[in-house]
Image (cartoon, rainbow, N blue to C red):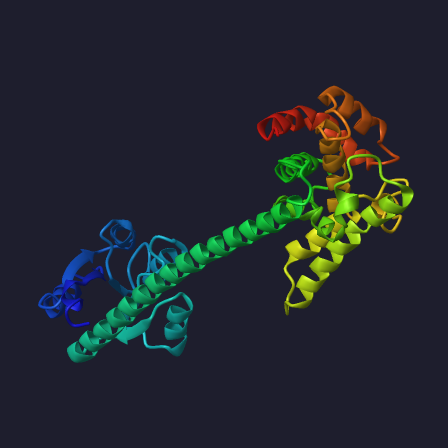
Length: 363
């Protein structure tokens, strides 16, 4: 610490020339000195770079006393961290308490005792250096935490995509389906944020979670037998019942993942709703539970529109791709029966973005 203290700068604030001369003579062998004879000048010097490392501040000055100078120093983010030591002949207990309440670090009474002054200046400069070091270490730690958080988020995203892609390897027709539906859901959610009904529900975190977990919506298909999943024609009623189980398989997989965590991530809860209920219908005729209206979780209502739209425009071995305009017509006709009317209204507004996304991730 001794190696750094000689370079410290002390601002001496006093309206009495003799006091300034005394203080500067004591300090000049060890520190650089700056001088102010009024409160206004002291504030200007304190705000000017390079700033003083410590301020010795007289209390009894005309126009602006030391208390007011200290108050303004501590109210200004530029100067609030500069330690202030009051120098005064006022010795009442209330005066000292007022100084500390305003943010001063010490209180030295006049007449000045040189060894006491030098010791206290040295101590508070040392404290100041320690605070700066700790602040720097905190900044470094925050940067490391932020970098690690971003790294973990990227890893989480990669694992989700890998899991979804693994499920899709069993269904050769899906192609870029997970990428398209992921983008569709985000477009719908971002637009619905402007709807007063959903502005507080569709927070940034929820929209991020929807985008992150949308690729998992059909992960349960890994549990569907190949002869059903890969059948090129229409499913029998029995086969369709087996296919519908993919929502349950997916839900149970995510529940099992949640059970391994002491504090399950909110994105897993979003994923569970989206995976399990994206085949529910607004009128209650969907599956797996026959939920109706707003009993269907919002993430699933969004995914329902995204998933059906993509199924309509995509080519399959058992059907040709449907034109965008026809798919839009079918979605809009399903408002209030298959789909949430609010989600369909949003879809109608962003349908051109859907077409652009489909083109960007064209199979």
